[in-house]
Length: 87
Image 1 (cartoon, helix red, strand yellow):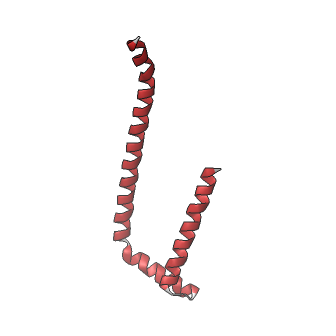
Image 2: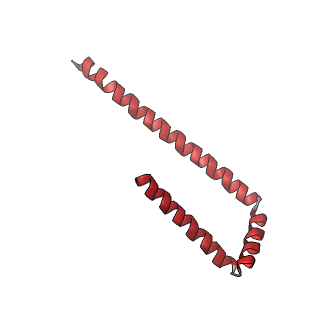
Image 3: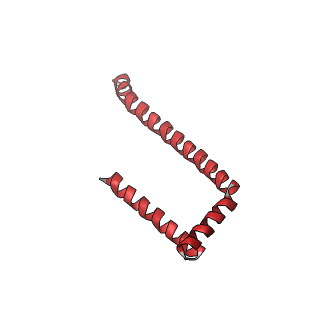
């Protein structure tokens, strides 16, 4: 009887183990991507600052106002994606 219970729980254990390993891989890949983006941003910081200054000047606003608009747009995109994922 105990062997039968063990055999029934084995597929459940395997599924949990696979889910755990998939989650670990996802976290590991996300961390690698974060580090790559961080490194790229550090290498291209001056170019990004020039682009922000130029674009803000073209729009006739300050760099800080332009940065605020960029953050607002990114937050709006995130909320929109979240709503799409929920539906």
